[in-house]
Length: 293
Image (cartoon, rainbow, N blue to C red; front, top):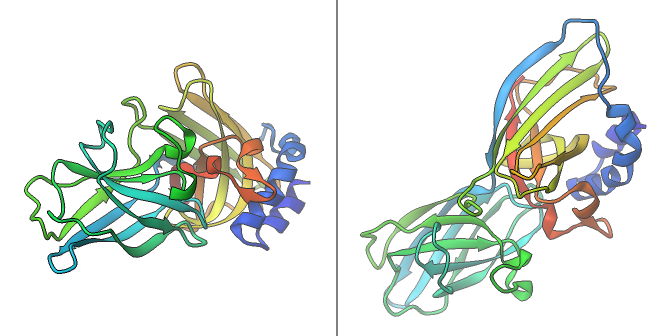
C-alpha cells in the first residue's frame, strides 16, 4: 500500500499529494512500522530541524506618497497560502500592542515562497523604530483576535534601532517563540540497501504540550517545497513539549540523496491539516531540515 501511495504522491503537486497521503497514512502506518534488519545500514548524520518560515522584509518609505513599501522574501510557508502582515509597536518578544501600519496580504506560491512587494496606506512619519514586522497565520479577512489560532504570528522581525525614517532597512524574519520557547529538533536517517528500508529517528522540543504534528519526507528543499515522498507517523509531544519518533519506512528504492529531500513537521496532526483536500491553517510547516545524504 505504501508503494502505491509513493507513486501517487510523486506524480502530482503538493496539495494533491497531501490529499493522497492523508487518505493512506493510516492504512500505510502498518507498512512503515519499525522492522528489524540484519544488514549494515548507510546512516545520515543527525541534522537540525530549524523553525520555519524564514526570510527578510526590506522596508522603504517614500516622502512624496508617504507610503511604506515592504519587499517580502519568505520561504517555508504553506504553499498557496495568504497571510496578514503589519508593523506593530514593540518587539517580537513583547507582542502586546495593536498594529500601527497594515499591509495588503502576502501570498505564497506553490513552493511555499512569498516573494512580492506590498505598499501600506500613507504613514506621515515614515518607518517607525521600536517596532517590528509581523506575519500572521491567516489572511486579514479571517484574522481573529489575539489568542485565536488565526492570529498566530508565524514570522517576526524587529526593526533596527536608528533606522532612518525613509529607510531602507532589511528586517530578518524568523518564527517567533511561543511562551518564550522556540521549537527545535533533529532528524537522523539510516538506509538499509538490502531491505530497501529507511530508519527515521526524529526528536523535537518546544512544541505545545501534548500536541500532535504531521511529519513527512518530501522532494525539494525547505526553501522550495515539493511533493511528499514518504509520510511518517504523527509526532506526539508530551506534557513538556518534547516528542520523539522512531519508525522504519519500507519500499524505499534508494538511499537519501546528497540533496533534493527534506523533512517537514507541520503545526497540526495529519487528520487536521486538510479539509476537503485543501490545506487548513494547521498545515503550516513549523520545523524543517534539508537532508544531506
